[in-house]
Image (cartoon, rainbow, N blue to C red; front, top):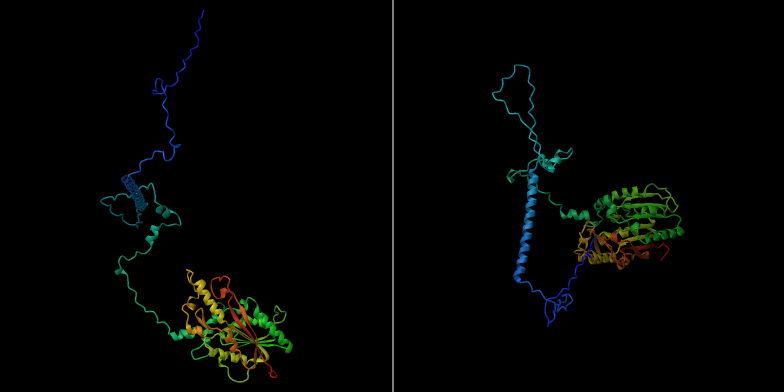
Length: 456
Protein backbone atom coordinates (compact mmCIF):
# COMPACT_ATOMS: atom_id res chain seq x y z
CA UNK A 1 0.00 0.00 0.00
CA UNK A 2 1.35 3.31 -1.05
CA UNK A 3 1.04 6.06 1.37
CA UNK A 4 0.49 9.46 -0.28
CA UNK A 5 1.93 12.50 1.39
CA UNK A 6 -0.21 15.58 1.57
CA UNK A 7 0.92 18.46 -0.68
CA UNK A 8 3.47 20.69 0.83
CA UNK A 9 2.06 23.98 1.89
CA UNK A 10 4.13 26.91 2.81
CA UNK A 11 3.30 28.64 5.98
CA UNK A 12 1.99 32.16 5.44
CA UNK A 13 4.51 34.86 6.17
CA UNK A 14 3.78 37.02 9.09
CA UNK A 15 2.93 40.63 8.32
CA UNK A 16 5.86 43.01 8.35
CA UNK A 17 6.40 44.48 11.70
CA UNK A 18 7.39 48.14 11.78
CA UNK A 19 10.16 49.15 14.02
CA UNK A 20 9.44 51.26 16.97
CA UNK A 21 7.64 50.86 20.22
CA UNK A 22 4.74 52.83 21.54
CA UNK A 23 3.63 51.66 24.94
CA UNK A 24 3.26 47.94 24.94
CA UNK A 25 2.47 47.67 21.23
CA UNK A 26 4.81 47.96 18.31
CA UNK A 27 3.78 51.06 16.32
CA UNK A 28 4.84 51.59 12.66
CA UNK A 29 7.04 54.50 11.75
CA UNK A 30 5.17 57.22 9.80
CA UNK A 31 6.73 58.29 6.50
CA UNK A 32 7.50 61.94 5.89
CA UNK A 33 5.04 63.70 3.55
CA UNK A 34 6.05 64.47 -0.08
CA UNK A 35 8.27 67.47 -0.35
CA UNK A 36 6.52 68.74 -3.46
CA UNK A 37 3.14 68.80 -1.68
CA UNK A 38 4.46 70.99 1.07
CA UNK A 39 3.89 74.68 1.18
CA UNK A 40 6.67 76.61 -0.60
CA UNK A 41 7.56 78.27 2.63
CA UNK A 42 7.96 74.87 4.33
CA UNK A 43 10.18 73.31 1.63
CA UNK A 44 13.80 72.77 2.55
CA UNK A 45 15.98 75.29 0.80
CA UNK A 46 19.37 74.52 -0.64
CA UNK A 47 22.17 76.65 0.64
CA UNK A 48 23.19 79.33 -1.88
CA UNK A 49 26.46 78.69 -3.70
CA UNK A 50 29.47 80.44 -2.39
CA UNK A 51 31.10 83.19 -4.39
CA UNK A 52 34.29 81.22 -4.52
CA UNK A 53 32.54 78.23 -6.13
CA UNK A 54 30.96 80.49 -8.83
CA UNK A 55 34.27 82.11 -9.66
CA UNK A 56 35.96 78.72 -9.93
CA UNK A 57 33.21 77.43 -12.28
CA UNK A 58 33.50 80.47 -14.54
CA UNK A 59 37.27 80.23 -14.65
CA UNK A 60 37.08 76.56 -15.49
CA UNK A 61 34.60 77.17 -18.32
CA UNK A 62 36.81 79.87 -19.79
CA UNK A 63 39.87 77.65 -19.60
CA UNK A 64 38.07 74.80 -21.35
CA UNK A 65 36.79 77.12 -24.10
CA UNK A 66 40.28 78.53 -24.62
CA UNK A 67 41.75 75.06 -24.80
CA UNK A 68 39.18 73.95 -27.36
CA UNK A 69 39.82 77.04 -29.50
CA UNK A 70 43.55 76.42 -29.44
CA UNK A 71 43.00 72.79 -30.39
CA UNK A 72 40.82 73.75 -33.37
CA UNK A 73 43.38 76.32 -34.52
CA UNK A 74 46.16 73.77 -34.20
CA UNK A 75 44.23 71.20 -36.22
CA UNK A 76 43.47 73.73 -38.93
CA UNK A 77 47.11 74.82 -39.18
CA UNK A 78 48.30 71.22 -39.32
CA UNK A 79 45.77 70.42 -42.03
CA UNK A 80 46.88 73.45 -44.06
CA UNK A 81 50.55 72.57 -43.69
CA UNK A 82 50.09 68.92 -44.57
CA UNK A 83 47.81 69.83 -47.46
CA UNK A 84 50.50 72.11 -48.90
CA UNK A 85 53.17 69.50 -48.39
CA UNK A 86 51.23 66.57 -49.82
CA UNK A 87 52.13 67.05 -53.42
CA UNK A 88 52.68 64.42 -55.96
CA UNK A 89 56.30 63.98 -56.81
CA UNK A 90 57.35 64.31 -60.39
CA UNK A 91 58.32 61.09 -62.02
CA UNK A 92 61.90 60.87 -63.28
CA UNK A 93 61.83 59.03 -66.56
CA UNK A 94 64.80 57.07 -67.83
CA UNK A 95 67.33 59.21 -69.69
CA UNK A 96 66.86 59.19 -73.42
CA UNK A 97 70.00 58.01 -75.22
CA UNK A 98 70.59 60.14 -78.31
CA UNK A 99 71.20 58.46 -81.60
CA UNK A 100 74.89 57.84 -82.32
CA UNK A 101 76.28 58.55 -85.76
CA UNK A 102 77.98 55.76 -87.65
CA UNK A 103 81.62 55.43 -86.77
CA UNK A 104 83.88 53.87 -84.20
CA UNK A 105 82.23 52.85 -80.97
CA UNK A 106 82.90 55.17 -78.02
CA UNK A 107 85.24 54.07 -75.28
CA UNK A 108 83.56 52.35 -72.34
CA UNK A 109 83.08 54.42 -69.22
CA UNK A 110 85.28 53.68 -66.26
CA UNK A 111 82.28 53.38 -63.95
CA UNK A 112 78.73 52.60 -64.91
CA UNK A 113 76.19 55.23 -63.95
CA UNK A 114 73.52 54.00 -61.58
CA UNK A 115 70.21 53.32 -63.22
CA UNK A 116 67.61 55.95 -62.50
CA UNK A 117 64.60 54.52 -60.84
CA UNK A 118 61.21 56.12 -60.65
CA UNK A 119 60.04 56.70 -57.09
CA UNK A 120 57.06 54.67 -55.99
CA UNK A 121 53.73 56.46 -56.41
CA UNK A 122 52.43 58.09 -53.31
CA UNK A 123 49.49 56.47 -51.60
CA UNK A 124 47.49 59.67 -51.31
CA UNK A 125 47.55 62.68 -53.62
CA UNK A 126 46.48 66.16 -52.71
CA UNK A 127 43.71 68.03 -54.43
CA UNK A 128 46.20 70.26 -56.24
CA UNK A 129 47.93 67.25 -57.82
CA UNK A 130 44.61 65.68 -58.84
CA UNK A 131 43.55 68.91 -60.50
CA UNK A 132 46.92 69.18 -62.19
CA UNK A 133 46.68 65.68 -63.64
CA UNK A 134 43.06 66.13 -64.78
CA UNK A 135 42.74 66.99 -68.47
CA UNK A 136 41.85 70.59 -69.19
CA UNK A 137 42.32 71.74 -65.58
CA UNK A 138 45.22 73.15 -63.67
CA UNK A 139 45.83 73.77 -60.02
CA UNK A 140 46.51 77.10 -58.45
CA UNK A 141 50.15 76.27 -57.82
CA UNK A 142 50.78 75.50 -61.49
CA UNK A 143 49.08 78.71 -62.56
CA UNK A 144 51.23 80.67 -60.16
CA UNK A 145 54.34 79.02 -61.53
CA UNK A 146 53.51 80.02 -65.09
CA UNK A 147 53.25 83.70 -64.22
CA UNK A 148 56.26 85.96 -64.15
CA UNK A 149 57.91 86.32 -60.73
CA UNK A 150 57.20 89.52 -58.86
CA UNK A 151 60.08 91.82 -57.89
CA UNK A 152 61.44 91.14 -54.46
CA UNK A 153 62.25 94.69 -53.50
CA UNK A 154 61.10 98.13 -54.61
CA UNK A 155 64.62 98.88 -55.85
CA UNK A 156 64.14 96.42 -58.72
CA UNK A 157 61.01 98.19 -59.96
CA UNK A 158 61.76 100.56 -62.77
CA UNK A 159 60.36 104.01 -62.20
CA UNK A 160 58.02 105.19 -64.91
CA UNK A 161 58.64 108.60 -66.36
CA UNK A 162 56.38 111.26 -64.89
CA UNK A 163 53.89 112.65 -67.37
CA UNK A 164 51.97 115.66 -66.06
CA UNK A 165 48.22 115.82 -66.72
CA UNK A 166 47.03 118.36 -69.25
CA UNK A 167 45.73 121.55 -67.67
CA UNK A 168 41.94 121.89 -67.42
CA UNK A 169 40.23 124.11 -69.97
CA UNK A 170 39.72 127.72 -68.98
CA UNK A 171 36.42 128.48 -67.22
CA UNK A 172 35.24 130.76 -70.03
CA UNK A 173 35.27 127.86 -72.52
CA UNK A 174 33.23 125.67 -70.15
CA UNK A 175 30.65 128.41 -69.58
CA UNK A 176 30.21 129.00 -73.30
CA UNK A 177 29.72 125.29 -73.99
CA UNK A 178 27.16 124.71 -71.20
CA UNK A 179 25.24 127.99 -71.42
CA UNK A 180 22.39 128.57 -73.82
CA UNK A 181 23.14 132.31 -74.10
CA UNK A 182 26.43 134.02 -74.84
CA UNK A 183 27.80 136.53 -72.31
CA UNK A 184 27.54 139.37 -74.81
CA UNK A 185 23.99 138.45 -75.86
CA UNK A 186 22.66 136.05 -78.47
CA UNK A 187 22.05 132.32 -78.66
CA UNK A 188 24.96 129.96 -78.06
CA UNK A 189 24.72 127.75 -81.15
CA UNK A 190 27.69 125.65 -79.98
CA UNK A 191 25.63 124.44 -77.03
CA UNK A 192 22.80 123.21 -79.27
CA UNK A 193 25.29 121.61 -81.66
CA UNK A 194 26.62 119.57 -78.76
CA UNK A 195 23.13 118.67 -77.50
CA UNK A 196 22.06 117.45 -80.95
CA UNK A 197 23.99 114.18 -80.56
CA UNK A 198 22.00 113.19 -77.43
CA UNK A 199 18.86 115.28 -77.84
CA UNK A 200 16.37 112.65 -76.62
CA UNK A 201 18.13 112.32 -73.24
CA UNK A 202 18.88 116.01 -72.77
CA UNK A 203 15.58 117.61 -73.82
CA UNK A 204 12.12 116.50 -72.72
CA UNK A 205 9.52 115.75 -75.39
CA UNK A 206 6.76 118.08 -74.21
CA UNK A 207 4.20 116.87 -76.74
CA UNK A 208 4.54 113.25 -75.59
CA UNK A 209 4.84 113.95 -71.84
CA UNK A 210 1.68 116.10 -71.80
CA UNK A 211 -0.61 114.19 -69.41
CA UNK A 212 -3.85 116.00 -70.27
CA UNK A 213 -3.19 116.28 -74.05
CA UNK A 214 -3.65 120.02 -73.65
CA UNK A 215 -1.21 120.93 -76.43
CA UNK A 216 -2.98 118.80 -79.03
CA UNK A 217 -6.39 120.24 -78.05
CA UNK A 218 -5.23 123.85 -78.33
CA UNK A 219 -3.56 123.25 -81.69
CA UNK A 220 -6.71 121.62 -83.07
CA UNK A 221 -8.84 124.51 -81.81
CA UNK A 222 -6.59 127.10 -83.48
CA UNK A 223 -6.62 125.17 -86.77
CA UNK A 224 -10.41 124.83 -86.62
CA UNK A 225 -10.81 128.60 -86.19
CA UNK A 226 -8.33 129.32 -88.99
CA UNK A 227 -10.17 126.98 -91.36
CA UNK A 228 -13.31 129.05 -90.97
CA UNK A 229 -11.64 132.37 -91.74
CA UNK A 230 -8.92 131.26 -94.16
CA UNK A 231 -8.76 128.60 -96.82
CA UNK A 232 -5.30 127.16 -96.08
CA UNK A 233 -3.07 127.24 -93.02
CA UNK A 234 0.62 128.16 -93.18
CA UNK A 235 2.45 127.07 -90.01
CA UNK A 236 5.88 127.88 -88.59
CA UNK A 237 7.79 125.93 -85.94
CA UNK A 238 10.20 128.54 -84.57
CA UNK A 239 12.88 126.52 -82.79
CA UNK A 240 11.92 123.06 -84.04
CA UNK A 241 14.84 121.27 -82.38
CA UNK A 242 14.85 117.60 -83.39
CA UNK A 243 11.39 117.92 -84.99
CA UNK A 244 9.25 116.24 -82.32
CA UNK A 245 6.22 118.43 -83.14
CA UNK A 246 6.50 118.28 -86.93
CA UNK A 247 4.63 115.00 -87.66
CA UNK A 248 1.58 116.18 -85.68
CA UNK A 249 1.65 119.67 -87.19
CA UNK A 250 1.98 118.23 -90.69
CA UNK A 251 -1.36 116.45 -90.23
CA UNK A 252 -3.21 119.71 -89.36
CA UNK A 253 -1.83 122.37 -91.73
CA UNK A 254 -1.31 122.76 -95.48
CA UNK A 255 2.25 124.12 -95.49
CA UNK A 256 4.96 123.93 -92.84
CA UNK A 257 8.27 125.69 -92.20
CA UNK A 258 10.75 124.55 -89.50
CA UNK A 259 13.69 126.72 -88.44
CA UNK A 260 16.40 126.38 -85.79
CA UNK A 261 19.79 127.90 -85.01
CA UNK A 262 21.63 124.51 -85.12
CA UNK A 263 22.48 122.84 -88.40
CA UNK A 264 22.68 119.40 -86.77
CA UNK A 265 19.23 119.74 -85.24
CA UNK A 266 17.75 120.77 -88.59
CA UNK A 267 19.26 117.73 -90.30
CA UNK A 268 17.87 115.49 -87.58
CA UNK A 269 14.42 117.09 -87.93
CA UNK A 270 14.45 116.25 -91.62
CA UNK A 271 14.96 112.59 -90.82
CA UNK A 272 12.22 112.64 -88.17
CA UNK A 273 9.63 114.25 -90.44
CA UNK A 274 10.22 111.91 -93.35
CA UNK A 275 8.69 112.33 -96.79
CA UNK A 276 5.53 114.47 -97.23
CA UNK A 277 2.34 113.11 -98.75
CA UNK A 278 1.93 110.22 -96.32
CA UNK A 279 -1.57 109.67 -94.97
CA UNK A 280 -1.69 110.49 -91.26
CA UNK A 281 -4.03 109.32 -88.48
CA UNK A 282 -6.43 112.20 -89.22
CA UNK A 283 -6.89 110.99 -92.77
CA UNK A 284 -5.15 114.00 -94.31
CA UNK A 285 -1.88 113.69 -96.25
CA UNK A 286 1.18 115.07 -94.49
CA UNK A 287 1.88 118.64 -95.59
CA UNK A 288 5.14 119.55 -97.33
CA UNK A 289 7.76 120.93 -94.98
CA UNK A 290 10.65 123.31 -95.58
CA UNK A 291 13.67 123.61 -93.30
CA UNK A 292 16.05 126.48 -92.59
CA UNK A 293 18.84 127.52 -90.20
CA UNK A 294 17.83 130.86 -88.65
CA UNK A 295 19.01 132.59 -85.46
CA UNK A 296 16.08 134.68 -84.19
CA UNK A 297 18.35 136.81 -82.00
CA UNK A 298 20.04 138.14 -85.17
CA UNK A 299 16.83 138.97 -87.00
CA UNK A 300 17.30 141.78 -89.50
CA UNK A 301 14.70 144.53 -89.69
CA UNK A 302 12.29 144.45 -92.59
CA UNK A 303 9.47 142.36 -93.93
CA UNK A 304 9.53 138.63 -93.22
CA UNK A 305 7.31 135.76 -94.23
CA UNK A 306 4.23 135.58 -92.03
CA UNK A 307 2.33 132.48 -91.01
CA UNK A 308 -1.15 131.78 -89.71
CA UNK A 309 0.04 129.48 -86.92
CA UNK A 310 3.40 129.90 -85.13
CA UNK A 311 4.71 127.41 -82.54
CA UNK A 312 7.33 128.31 -79.94
CA UNK A 313 7.82 125.39 -77.53
CA UNK A 314 10.39 125.98 -74.78
CA UNK A 315 12.46 128.35 -76.88
CA UNK A 316 12.52 131.27 -74.41
CA UNK A 317 14.73 129.45 -71.91
CA UNK A 318 18.06 131.29 -72.22
CA UNK A 319 19.13 132.65 -68.78
CA UNK A 320 19.19 136.19 -70.19
CA UNK A 321 15.94 138.14 -70.23
CA UNK A 322 17.14 140.43 -73.04
CA UNK A 323 17.83 137.42 -75.31
CA UNK A 324 14.38 135.96 -74.58
CA UNK A 325 12.66 139.25 -75.32
CA UNK A 326 14.52 139.54 -78.64
CA UNK A 327 13.44 136.01 -79.63
CA UNK A 328 9.83 136.73 -78.67
CA UNK A 329 9.77 139.98 -80.69
CA UNK A 330 11.12 138.16 -83.77
CA UNK A 331 8.55 135.40 -83.30
CA UNK A 332 5.58 137.79 -82.94
CA UNK A 333 6.65 139.59 -86.10
CA UNK A 334 6.16 136.35 -88.07
CA UNK A 335 2.50 135.95 -87.04
CA UNK A 336 0.05 136.94 -89.78
CA UNK A 337 -3.01 139.13 -89.15
CA UNK A 338 -5.67 137.03 -87.47
CA UNK A 339 -3.12 134.28 -86.79
CA UNK A 340 -2.18 132.55 -83.54
CA UNK A 341 0.98 132.10 -81.52
CA UNK A 342 1.12 128.99 -79.32
CA UNK A 343 3.80 129.72 -76.71
CA UNK A 344 5.12 127.15 -74.18
CA UNK A 345 7.52 128.26 -71.42
CA UNK A 346 8.81 126.71 -68.15
CA UNK A 347 6.93 127.66 -64.99
CA UNK A 348 8.64 129.36 -62.07
CA UNK A 349 5.98 128.11 -59.63
CA UNK A 350 6.61 124.54 -60.76
CA UNK A 351 10.39 124.92 -60.46
CA UNK A 352 10.02 126.16 -56.89
CA UNK A 353 7.68 123.26 -56.04
CA UNK A 354 10.20 120.79 -57.48
CA UNK A 355 12.97 122.28 -55.34
CA UNK A 356 10.79 122.04 -52.21
CA UNK A 357 9.85 118.44 -53.01
CA UNK A 358 13.53 117.56 -53.45
CA UNK A 359 14.47 119.09 -50.12
CA UNK A 360 11.58 117.36 -48.34
CA UNK A 361 11.66 113.86 -49.88
CA UNK A 362 14.92 113.21 -51.74
CA UNK A 363 17.62 114.91 -49.73
CA UNK A 364 16.89 113.18 -46.35
CA UNK A 365 17.17 109.75 -47.99
CA UNK A 366 20.49 108.03 -47.31
CA UNK A 367 20.64 106.76 -50.84
CA UNK A 368 23.50 106.96 -53.27
CA UNK A 369 23.12 109.98 -55.51
CA UNK A 370 23.45 108.97 -59.16
CA UNK A 371 23.94 110.93 -62.34
CA UNK A 372 20.21 111.59 -62.66
CA UNK A 373 20.12 113.25 -59.23
CA UNK A 374 19.75 117.02 -59.04
CA UNK A 375 21.75 117.57 -55.88
CA UNK A 376 23.86 120.30 -57.44
CA UNK A 377 20.81 122.10 -58.80
CA UNK A 378 19.33 122.88 -55.38
CA UNK A 379 22.25 122.79 -52.92
CA UNK A 380 23.13 125.55 -52.68
CA UNK A 381 20.63 127.85 -54.38
CA UNK A 382 21.86 131.05 -55.97
CA UNK A 383 19.79 133.91 -54.53
CA UNK A 384 20.20 136.28 -57.53
CA UNK A 385 19.15 133.51 -59.94
CA UNK A 386 16.10 132.66 -57.85
CA UNK A 387 15.08 136.32 -57.78
CA UNK A 388 15.39 136.51 -61.58
CA UNK A 389 13.49 133.18 -61.92
CA UNK A 390 16.48 131.24 -63.26
CA UNK A 391 16.67 127.61 -62.10
CA UNK A 392 19.18 124.89 -62.87
CA UNK A 393 18.08 121.77 -64.69
CA UNK A 394 20.85 119.15 -64.46
CA UNK A 395 23.48 121.84 -64.29
CA UNK A 396 22.05 124.06 -67.08
CA UNK A 397 20.69 127.47 -66.05
CA UNK A 398 17.17 127.79 -67.48
CA UNK A 399 14.89 130.80 -67.52
CA UNK A 400 11.44 130.23 -66.01
CA UNK A 401 8.37 132.45 -65.87
CA UNK A 402 5.74 133.11 -63.26
CA UNK A 403 2.15 133.83 -64.31
CA UNK A 404 2.47 137.54 -63.61
CA UNK A 405 5.76 137.85 -65.53
CA UNK A 406 4.31 135.94 -68.48
CA UNK A 407 1.27 138.22 -68.66
CA UNK A 408 3.52 141.27 -68.61
CA UNK A 409 5.77 139.79 -71.30
CA UNK A 410 2.81 139.18 -73.63
CA UNK A 411 1.28 142.60 -73.07
CA UNK A 412 2.20 143.78 -76.56
CA UNK A 413 0.19 146.23 -78.61
CA UNK A 414 -1.78 144.58 -81.38
CA UNK A 415 -1.92 141.14 -79.72
CA UNK A 416 -4.54 139.58 -77.44
CA UNK A 417 -3.90 136.79 -74.94
CA UNK A 418 -6.83 134.41 -75.31
CA UNK A 419 -5.76 131.65 -72.91
CA UNK A 420 -3.07 130.75 -70.38
CA UNK A 421 -3.19 127.30 -68.79
CA UNK A 422 -1.03 124.56 -67.36
CA UNK A 423 0.55 121.65 -69.22
CA UNK A 424 1.31 118.97 -66.62
CA UNK A 425 3.83 116.16 -66.84
CA UNK A 426 4.96 113.35 -64.51
CA UNK A 427 7.38 113.69 -61.63
CA UNK A 428 9.87 111.30 -63.21
CA UNK A 429 10.71 114.02 -65.74
CA UNK A 430 12.01 116.17 -62.87
CA UNK A 431 13.19 113.83 -60.06
CA UNK A 432 14.17 110.17 -59.73
CA UNK A 433 11.74 109.51 -56.85
CA UNK A 434 7.98 109.20 -56.39
CA UNK A 435 6.34 112.15 -54.68
CA UNK A 436 3.27 111.03 -52.68
CA UNK A 437 0.05 113.04 -53.16
CA UNK A 438 1.53 116.12 -54.76
CA UNK A 439 0.49 118.21 -57.75
CA UNK A 440 2.40 117.43 -60.93
CA UNK A 441 5.04 119.80 -62.31
CA UNK A 442 3.85 121.89 -65.23
CA UNK A 443 4.70 124.43 -67.92
CA UNK A 444 2.75 127.52 -68.94
CA UNK A 445 0.88 127.46 -72.27
CA UNK A 446 -0.27 130.77 -73.76
CA UNK A 447 -2.41 131.22 -76.89
CA UNK A 448 -1.92 134.71 -78.38
CA UNK A 449 -3.90 136.08 -81.35
CA UNK A 450 -2.79 138.90 -83.57
CA UNK A 451 -5.49 141.39 -84.45
CA UNK A 452 -6.51 142.11 -87.99
CA UNK A 453 -5.66 145.44 -89.61
CA UNK A 454 -9.27 146.64 -89.31
CA UNK A 455 -9.57 145.62 -85.64
CA UNK A 456 -8.85 148.06 -82.88
